[in-house]
Each structure stands twice: as C-alpha cells, then as structure tokens.
Length: 122
Image (cartoon, rainbow, N blue to C red; front, side, top):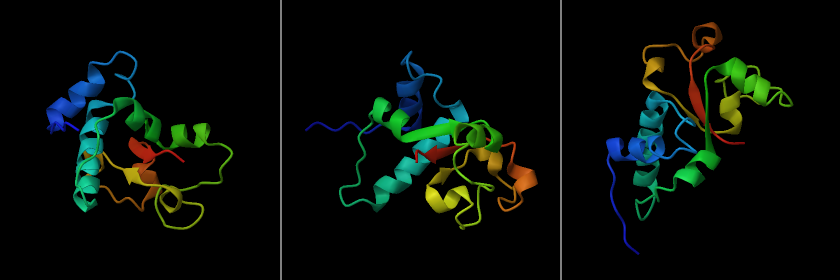
C-alpha cells in the first residue's frame, strides 16, 4: 500500500477540484472537517485515514443552519444541537463546527441556530 500524506490545502483541493463533490462542503466546512479527521487519526492505532472524497461525502453532511437539518430530518424529534439528551443532535452523532462558532455559546440555541455545522450522517 502506498500512503500519501496531505496537508489542509491538498485536502480542500481534493474536494474542490472534483465536479461532483465540489459543493458538498464550504471552504470553512472543509477546514473544520480536515481538523476533525486529523484529531480522529491521532486516536487511531495506525494514525492514518484514507482520503476518499466519495466516502467522506457519504459519511458527512454540512448544513447551512439548524433549520436546514430539521427540514432534512423532519422524522426525528431533535430540538437542539447540543445538550446530550435524546432531543439533542449531539446525543446521536458527531458534530463538527467551523471557525464561525468561535466565541459562541453552543448551549444558547438562539445564538447558534443560524450557524453552519457538519454531522457524521445518521
């Protein structure tokens, strides 16, 4: 097996240069996703994650805001992004936050309901 290490710029380019998947994530979302996958890889025994654009696009989705998430998952009774209870998204999946969340109170639904976020698909 041949492994190539990619930096953040190469990771983002892998998505942005592929016509089918170039709009799956915003630039800020890809930066956050890269950081998340870097952290995950550090916790793994072999510390490598394959850069498979198709698989990543199948595993993760970026939402413009919480309302968009609720519209797409209208069959679920999820009222909050964070909180750890069954009516909160973070109870069910991983949530990846772009830089625009910096300094925001993630427990304040009104403050964060218009911010984008990425989830590992349910």
